[in-house]
Length: 358
Image (cartoon, rainbow, N blue to C red; front, side, top):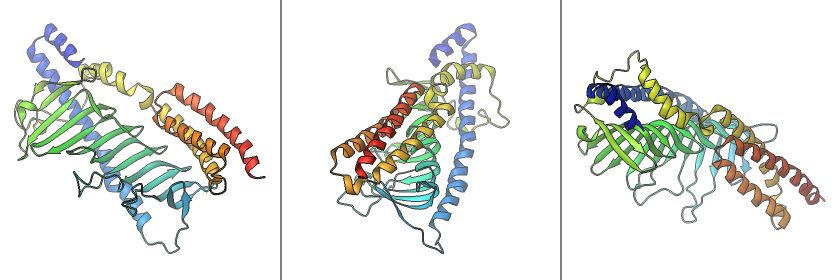
């Protein structure tokens, strides 16, 4: 898509005009990264450490622990006894061979959902074979129990160590950010736009050898084709340290008109105008998640005495499936359907509850 636009610019002008646009695009990406880093560094150095310090300091009066589904919660609660405010969740181990390796979340909550600033540390299911000394985690913004906003994720799922700093939606790398990968041959940094964890449309790639030297002939403005699953280097760095040279100057940065047109036609249209990336979707989904959390929490309180009741367990299983479907939803039309399903489920549980209380 970008290459087509660049070809038109070349036809209407000349090769030098294309070079100028490529440099402007790289400068725009660098400015986006530096602007985003200010927000991420605030979370990393100020917002989350403040929460963590408050949660880990020795309390004068010990906090009462609350059994919250498959975890133990300590912290602030609301009138419905749901986590609300700042708190800590320690989850049951999912690995019988490592019963003491518990995932842990420290951060903010809203009506039982992880919403606000927080860090989830993945002690369970680590890739110990490939990365024995790496502890994966996500630190950043949450909404309705999902990564939503900007954050930092340390990734151990692959053979090569990786990390990502940038935008997330629905627990997925989605939007602008920086993806970093290390391997025995060196490292790769991708600055740009992502959809479902995949580099998309265009970005800047920087490849380094295992001595940390930039490989300029492999680094530069790159186009990504999701359908064909290809990447094409459109403009390589003129010299080794182009990324940090004055040619890419973000001081007093103002986006040029031609770059705004390219951004609107490619990035804004295909990423930031879809439902998933709008504030309307995020807020609507959070409201539905909070309502469903109330229902799930209320229903779960009957588990100990009624886990052999078929009607009750069928209801619990149905709600668990509904929760997973809600987590993966990404369209406003889907949210309307979920709201209706939760309203109907609330009526059904009211009827079940009357039978259980007899």
